[in-house]
Image 1 (cartoon, helix red, strand yellow):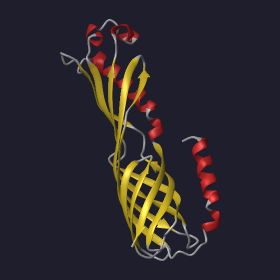
Image 2 (cartoon, rainbow, N blue to C red; image 1 turned 135 degrees about the horizontal axis):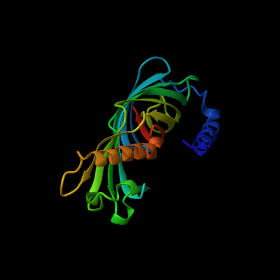
Image 3 (spheres, rainbow, N blue to C red; image 1 turned 180 degrees about the vertical axis):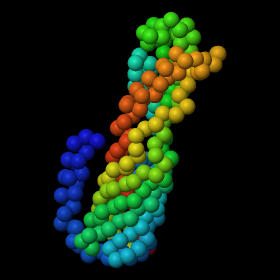
Image 4 (cartoon, helix red, strand yellow; image 1 turned 60 degrees about the horizontal axis):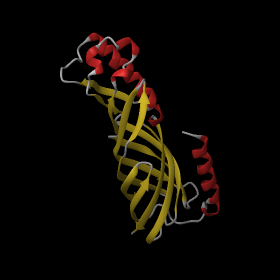
Length: 228
């Protein structure tokens, strides 16, 4: 994560300080929210638990793609975020500000496809004609199945019936990316050839390094809520 993220977070938090101690009975009632942010679109249901605390459960989904070149191979990465959350909010000042912790059942993954033209076959493998003729490389990147989460935020109507808004910022600890099922798709199956396996092992490490920024994933969300 960049320092810019934390500077933005600090600025927004400071702007909300006047409302931190406003008593809104944060532990009362049931809330329904729709949200959008760095984890995509989602819905949440929350309920009171203990004084000044709330329990939230939700679902989010996001799919997009981006390109990157690694060792002269042109890759397309397709992240797909598909997770369930169970979070515990604590309002330390009995007001609008809250601290949040919990975990995501983490189905986040990244699809990988790559292609290489004959002139760009990596030097140690240029004598392998089948690499020059390969159709593509494909595989998947997975993360740990349970991802801890920590964050903070502000909720306008913590204990008041009606519509409101919320902002939330945090970090999802997904663990190191793990490349699985990386293989060459060619007219003839060459994935059991030792030279190819060495080549794919190198690519796995390169891809994991490329996607290392997903290990600590910044979460920023805006929510529209209705409090019953």
